[in-house]
Image (cartoon, rainbow over all chains, first blue to last red; front, side, top):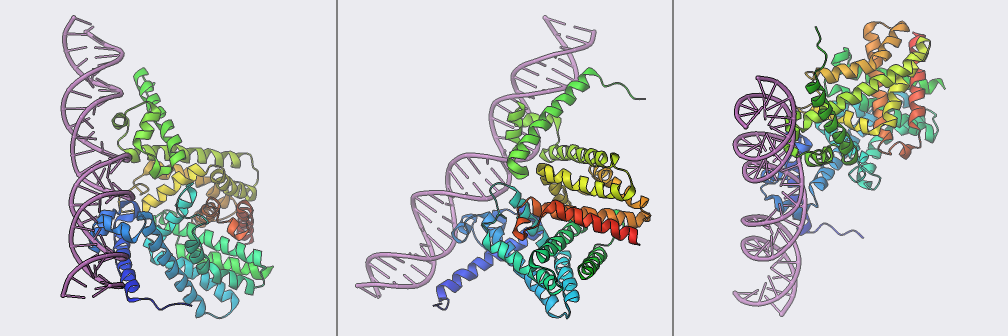
Amino acid sequence: MRMRESRKEAVSRHKRELILDAARSVFAEEGLEGASLRAIATRAGYTPAALYFHFDSKEAIYAEVLRQSLASLGEAVGAAVATTRGAKQRLHAAGMGFFRYYAENPRDLDLGFYLFRGGMKPAGLGHDRDHALNAALETALHPIAEAAEALGASRPKANMVVVDCFAHATGLLLLLHTGRIRMFGASAPDMMDAYLREKVAQLTRE
Amino acid sequence: MRMRESRKEAVSRHKRELILDAARSVFAEEGLEGASLRAIATRAGYTPAALYFHFDSKEAIYAEVLRQSLASLGEAVGAAVATTRGAKQRLHAAGMGFFRYYAENPRDLDLGFYLFRGGMKPAGLGHDRDHALNAALETALHPIAEAAEALGASRPKANMVVVDCFAHATGLLLLLHTGRIRMFGASAPDMMDAYLREKVAQLTRE
DNA sequence: ACTCAATTCTAACAGTGTTCAATAATTTAA
DNA sequence: TTAAATTATTGAACACTGTTAGAATTGAGT
């Protein structure tokens, strides 16, 4: 049976959130490597050492900021789908929702890439153990799979559609936020839109 | 008029290459952040400070390693295209060549991602100033554009095909090398293949 | 043998994430 | 109200990082 959060817990949680706010803003300004624990601590009104009472490490702080970011992403995609009727349209809306969120929030994309880069290292963030992070990501992507199944795709096929959309969006965003897409005179949102239309057509064609 | 490289220059170049070899292997083992100048120097038989005679900074060493990696990529793609006849097949071969190179050389992919991540920061690697790096990348991608034009696409359209292929491949590689693709029960090479087939069909259809 | 430049080293600097014992603040018990 | 116990916070240190300045070494040309 769940107890209501005690006063003490609420205070403690509030302090954690204060540190996370500071971390978010420092990450945004200095990037992830550039952000020093000292800077985060100062901005939160703490000594560096004090952060270690509330978090295990700098990486743990990053992980929590990222988790919250993925939750926001999930809400954005969910909202985009909720206001859309029809399986085709919902697939399109979910894909564009994902793309748009990161197109409009480059900071969060920056956070996200670290998750994947971490996954390449033998010991780091972004591995299957990180249940919270993976769960948040899957939740955000779920509407795409759902719409694909509504279009008649099998479960495995629907999963492949998710991977496909995710891959295409991520790659475009990578190019978008480094100015490289202009190098080719193309517009990222237009390309994502064109890709999704083709994908929907391909699905209904089968 | 080009002089032949003097003996002294040859020795100096050889030493640089020695440092780069050490850097490459340390980068591969420890990742890019994990690799310390001390480790690189030691492996090359130097003191950390000595590296600063041959390179401006740690970042400069990384940039050179990356440049060489992009050159290898270009050779790989070029080789794949050279042994293939027909525009459709060459587009497919170029795309798969790009994908395969990074599928088989995760280390180089790791290097490459840093280029893009750096491009997100205000002052870092990966900006338009980096002529050598951008040139190497464009050279590697050129066969794709060439094949697309051979299929009747206009220059701008061909560039969009490049962006599209690049985005899709990059996104898939991101998923592949973090084990996340298995999470959806899909195979990355198969998906890249399917994507390229669809892309070729789409181009010839128009 | 002497010079002069190219190369390498030693020693230090300011910065990083992190730990630990000591301290302050706050809640609980008597 | 006071004493005890928990919870928070700090200051000082540690080992590490990339980088720099200046001294020491090497090696070739005269």
